[in-house]
Amino acid sequence: MKVGFISLGCAKNLVDSEHIIALFEDDFFEYEADPRKCDVIVINTCGFILDAKKEAIDTILEMAEYKKKNLKKLIVTGCFVERYYDDCVKEFEEVDAFIPIRDYQKMPQILSELFNHEFKCAYGKNRKLITNSYTAYLKISDGCDNRCAYCAIPLIRGNCKSYPIEDIVKEAKRLKELGVKELNVVAQDTTYYGYDLYHRFALKELLPLLDEIGFKWIRILYMYPDEIDEELIKTIQDCKHVVPYFDIPVQYGNDAMLKLMNRRGSVKLIKEEIKMIRSYFPDAIIRTTLIVGFPHETEKRFLDTVEMVKEVRFDSLGAFTFSKEDDTKSFEMTCQVPEKIKHERYERLMSVQNQIVKEINESRIGKHYEVLVERYEEIFKRYVARSYMSAPDGVDGVIYINDDDMKVGEFYEVEITGYKDYDLLAKRAN
Image 1: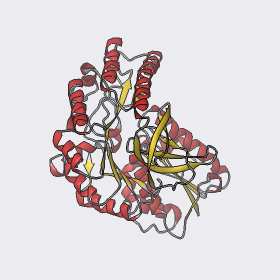
Image 2: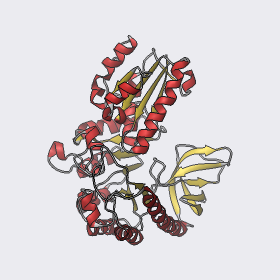
Image 3: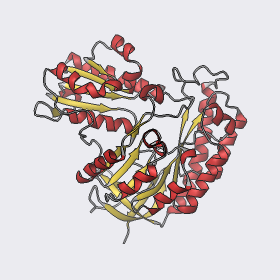
Image 4: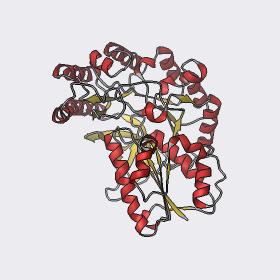
């Protein structure tokens, strides 16, 4: 049977998809990228915010159309199913099986009954990489113990469940054997890693072990501000392969709003931590996420955030307009911000960030960087690459290189010659 997979949402969900895909690795199935040719389609959904839920629904409905043609089985899994299982069963009659996250360990049995074919592999035992062969994500925990007022992740995924250090190291070594050169460490909160298992933040213990394996780059994503201390920064500095890339979602630049969001720490703490990071790593990349239009946001509070952005000068910044999520603390909050004002403030904030990025990119012209080549664009006769400054999720921009003799998946030194918006232009260094 020809089986196709669609993975929606974040990198953490993508790792789940890779474990699901591995279950289908036997002679009974073969992979097929074109849904028109598939006998089976598996959709792994996201259910985090309104846009993600809409994408999940639209994708299910789109793939359900193939049931009228040659598609025999449509299977839907993931966060959206976990959160709205009963509604899914009621609304989508074309779907043959909804498998919520809580049933992932039972997935081989569920699939065996569905196909009348034995699925021998246990869920989580193997992975089939669907990223480029030289880059992969390493999930070190699932769920989250933080209770941010806007976030539904703990409702969907539950409390933080860290994976044992020895299991993570084993998985990392397996990825290295598969040819992975860039390892991206992910969790809902990577800096919280290990607290549920070892009663201490254990990321600083894990990183040196990963560093010894020999990856070219190790990148840490999703670091909670108040869990970053100097000992962790020194650990990163001592590691040869952990790149100075700090993804720190700060969410807002006003203490009263941070309290309403149920975020720990303060704006002062955020600024001090970033200053400390830059004292250890002058070329550190600081990436963040902000929410615009959270309940009780006033013009003054919004301007506090703008001023923080101007002062800190984040290298990469993603902003979202507030999305009301069922069963979260913020859903019933008073003083909701009108949609028109949300979007107007979002545009103003991103205009400020765009100017900052322009100035940062101008300062990079003439500098040399080591890059990982990801693909060749035939139509433009150029290669697309990333330096340590960009994660593989497409948020931070890329580097375009005019050259005719490079290999995808290899590292090269380039010189920055210009920029266009968030992307850099480069030539191969002499």
